[in-house]
Image: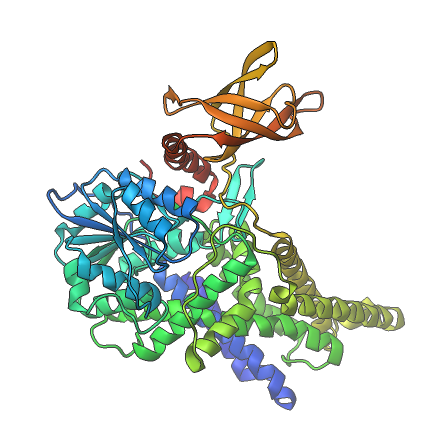
Length: 618
């Protein structure tokens, strides 16, 4: 990290002092400023992740009152039900409140079924923050656990975190927001290689533990324990912005309160499954961060330490990345199509300054990002977010942004407009590369290849531009294709199902009763895929028993909806029979949900490499 900063300063000093093209400052200056932005952001990142905390769970405090807040607006009932099952199973004594801003009778009935308090309000002002503040009026717990409607907690969540509050200065304990739908837009999962990565993994596995060292880990809206006394001191959850979480944490720490980051997965939720949902969520985060910057600038706000100021500033400054990425994408296109150069220097001098700066910086970043592959994935998603980040900065600083709930479940069709800018730039880059290659081929035939790299010309800059344009194409096009392919039809995620869940079934036909068994895959409380040596007939009714959690559940009636071939090896195949549960009790559904989140999701999450390397293990 130190070497990266040293060589970056050396490189930027040379760039500002000796390489600007004063005949094209409109082009040359934005590029060097984009590079300076990258240096500042990288330096702040290195500062944040210099020393990662590794906290152990302290003994739980006894006889404390805890309220669990589950705010909801329009989330599907099936998703909310899974969260309430998790809340009911929390071992530490607590009271769960469903905060329904949708005023839905079916949600009230669900809350009553699980013995939860049900709170609603006529005035939906201040969105989620207002909903949480309303609940503070009607509850009395000394500590509050906030969970999004899709975040299913593990039974020991409160037991493992409430002990941190033995320190009277601790206002909040934040845990990672992990996700169980490993096929979401923000995940890159390869089941065969047992590898997965998700776009928020770097933040929760590396950046938050780094911020924690500086007492700057902040509230992320869910999977968080908060001291009521601390909230009351700042007037409740911050309502002036659409990101009440980071704003609330900033105000708490400005008052001298401490935060704790417990780097262990204690709940799992739903990540946005499509670019549409991903973009809505990121726009809200980015615009909200800009709103916080306007209202409570961490660089000037009273009460914060210098490290806290830098950590909060870094979390807001990162949203300016969109402008930098746009400049980087357009630079080789402009060079190859116009011949105008933003850098005036010879090849040898450029190599002397650029190569050590670039490769040391890349290596330093990759060491903290789970390797080079993780760093490339981060950069890919930065490309897809650039338009969204630019919108967030402009709307957050100069416009108005309404709170928008991230879509959960249901059908969301792809929209080519969401990646139109990336597509246009990719096409322009391809055209520019073809033009550059054609021109250099002509020069090579006319004067020889050595002439291109000689000190007499700047044609080496064309070669570099062709390389960078090609790199950006290979970086951007795959993620654009994923964005266009990714659609969501299922209301509930189907777990991969490699969990050795045996399914016994009985097939009753006139004059014939046959019994057999197979393995369940793609399990939900509403169906599964039954893997067997032979196909079942579509439309057949089966009587099923699932064997998990050390027992056999009560009988389920299921209907065969489809049957497909599963190739095991060159000479061996099995059949996946899609079963829809037709008659299943709520108690069995709840047992399946409990199994999925306490067993299946935990095992499934083990393929997240960066999380596996950094998270606290049981």
